[in-house]
Amino acid sequence: MKAPDGNRYRIEALAKGLDVLSLFDETTTSLKLRDICERTGIPMPTAFRVVATLEEGGYLERSADGVIQPGVAVLTLGSAALRGSSLVQLSEQPLRQLAEATGETVNLGVLLRDQVLYLARIRNTDLVTANIQVGSTLPAAFTSMGKLLLSYLDAGELRDLYANAELAGGGPNAAHSVGELEARLATIRQQGYALQDEEVAPGLRSVSVPVFGRDARPAAAINIAVNTTRHDLPALRGTLLERARATAADISLRLRSA
Image (cartoon, rainbow, N blue to C red):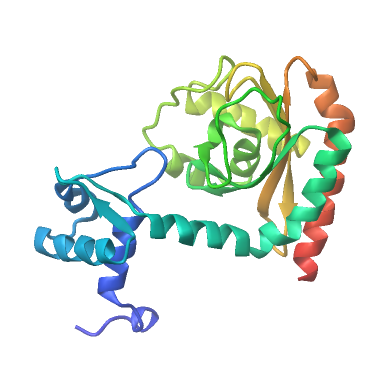
């Protein structure tokens, strides 16, 4: 059967390989071959050949007991993609200036389904938080950047994203239901920035603002993350928010001019 015009350049074997690689993330770091078949719908013989090909190239590794994990080549590709991203490159100088001006940790992130993916991070060494690095993901519902970006989704998109989902984990002030999350997102949409007050982990607060390119929706978000012993919520809504907004405006201008 002839493929639709929009897919006439599609290479099915390559698409299957990408489907397999996309199964792995921070919460899924290893799989058996049968798991790959079940999650992708790829028949066992085909999945075996796909995995063997990716293994030969160093993109997957297989242990003696058949457990399959991402290989070093995937890490190399990921690092190169992050370093080469125009968004990351254009944001680097403004983010460093923001970190120097505030003495706090600053981050750049984008929405990846229901997760926020950290693209850049300049860390204040005394910040008490999880081991977040460039390339890390956290549940968007618990983070200031994630909530900010979620607030730009329409109601249907948000429902699809969290269909039949119950929020679990996070810090002491995290939202525990989609309804509670929706109420917080409504406030964020109205005020134009997002706060996180011990929703990721105890002892951590942050304030986030959007970065825009040429579209009406944000291209990314930036935040300033602080220890609760250093800054209270009024401080986040004051000078730190003003500095974050100025930096986001700088990055937005660079994106539109690129």
